[in-house]
Structures are given as structure tokens and as C-alpha cells.
Image 1 (cartoon, rainbow, N blue to C red):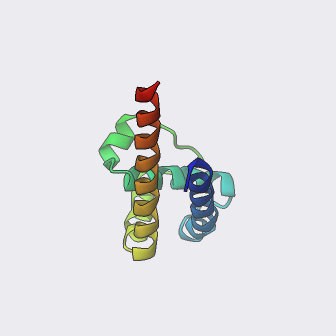
Image 2 (cartoon, one colour):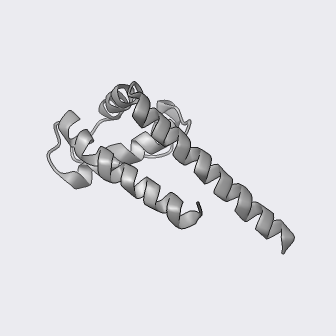
Length: 106
């Protein structure tokens, strides 16, 4: 599965989780739920809450870091969500590895 397969997978994950996030938070519009999704990507990717906070403030619409962390805590307990993120990051790493091999062969 190449780049486009990976991209489809991540878009599918976002399309599935965004409405679910919407059910978990007080903010009532989809664009704000994407902020939560982006936070999830960073957390499932191995960043701590402190690292994300330190990287800059991307929050708005009354979203707090603590609420983002609450959503992460809840969704990280869902084995299907955790596995989907884990598999997606594995695919990403394989793509990076392939690109690096191509670049070194040039």
C-alpha cells in the first residue's frame, strides 16, 4: 500500500473520529473538532501533552489542552482506535523508509 493508500486510510480515520469527537466535546462545529483530531494524531504519535503545548498554541473556540487530553484519554482506551492509529503510524514509517531508500539511491 503506497502513499495514496496511506492517505485514504488517514482520511478515513479522520472522517470516522471527527463526529465521534463532536459527541464528546462542548464545541458544536466540525472545524473545531479537527483541532482535537490533530491533537490525537500528535499524542498517538508519541508526543506528550507537555511537548504539544510547548510547540505552540493552536487552540481556539474555547478548546483547552486539558479537554484535548481528556478526549485522548477516552479514545486511547478504545482498542480499535489505538490499533488504527498504531497501524497508520507503522504504514507512515514504512513510507518514510521507502522514500529514504529512494533518495539514497539517487
